[in-house]
Length: 552
Ligand SMILES: Nc1nc2c(ncn2[C@@H]2O[C@H](COP(=O)(O)OP(=O)(O)OP(=O)(O)O)[C@@H](O)[C@H]2O)c(=O)[nH]1
Ligand SMILES: [Mg+2]
Image (cartoon, rainbow, N blue to C red):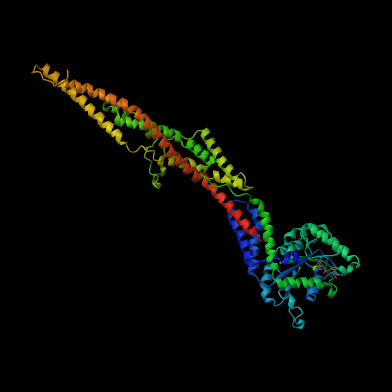
């Protein structure tokens, strides 16, 4: 029965170390994300495994555990063939753990220190008189524990502490109490992940009529199966008869020779920890995609909060304003200059501000977001968190939501600076403005020259001087041609340019809007998506690590 789960499960120490390291990786990944209280068993196992593996691998620590009076101390003494641990009629007798080491004590000292067995309760089973009788048990460290169902609380604490540390447990039950609920529910059942380091002995078998023994053993076997301990060795023993523990002795010899119990115990511990942590991970995290629907929604909400529509509108107006200033009729350009530039009103120049550290105080005068914009932004942030955490088990959704909101208070300034730093494409005046502007000057100069010529002609006539002979273009004198032609050409150029400016202003607005969206999108990525993705990365790492830790 024992071979069924023991023979094929030799544990490679390196593989075990890798599993323990995977648990540590899990702990690192979830640090700060999962409440510490849920991680205590995992921390304990990592610490315990590290210590046990660093201590003697040549020794196998076996504990005799059971209810008071079941005969633990009697078995301990019988196995050691010495009276080391007091056996009593008054219960409970054993209050602290006693240890017996087969082989030299030296090598086991640090192990016993770690186990917390007091030096005066340590014994050595190494006698020249034995010859080779005890050689098969060399390396055994046998512990006689207090009773686990004790009326003394300190006994129970001592038992619980040591049951967490030993390599193999021999549960000692007796014919009267083998079916007691506390033995099964509080202890044996708890060890179902440690079946391969569990042995059960029915002691005081001599107190049963021989014909009864198989029935009691069968009954106990059924109880053990129900405890999840199917297949564990179950042996009858008689502590008061030197031949009554041959089966147990043989079992211990096999365990000591294998030198696997410590590894199996720790592997069982890792199994238990992995099972306990399993609910903390679930499906794979969603892909981190900055262009998915919720991220686009976020960018749109950020754009609203950052005043992108206001700024883009100002870009269109500023384009018209500036183009008009360069290409308009020169004589009325001055009027335009009196009106403020729509972008400058927002404290924006249009070419993108320097965002080096010193200039970070600089900010726009874009109005603060409205309550509606703020709540749209909150909703969008929540939507991002919900999408990322939808399928994740607790506590990850809360962690993701907290991460998404973690830099909320930095957002207004960041958005403001991003808008200020965006090149809105209005810094350079297009060449065609200058060409049209020069043309306007030219026709204006012509008109002014014509006017001047006419005025001069009138003045000459008024002073009675001989009249000037004006050259003519057909019937019309040149000064008139220049004046009227210049004025008409100026108006015509202005009329023809206006629709072009409108069209170009709309394009400038679209271009600026695209650039602004890119800017606020990168702010969303930095302040909302990146923190969320960091949590998802922790989750993915934890999931991966737990899978590695589960790999037997
Ligand atoms: N007949 C018989 N008596 C036994 C056997 N094993 C133990 N006893 C007796 O049972 C009584 C209790 O034995 P202990 O060895 O002190 O029991 P224990 O489990 O160490 O008890 P605590 O230290 O109180 O937890 C003693 O009187 C033993 O002589 C056995 O196999 N057969
Ligand atoms: Mg005892």
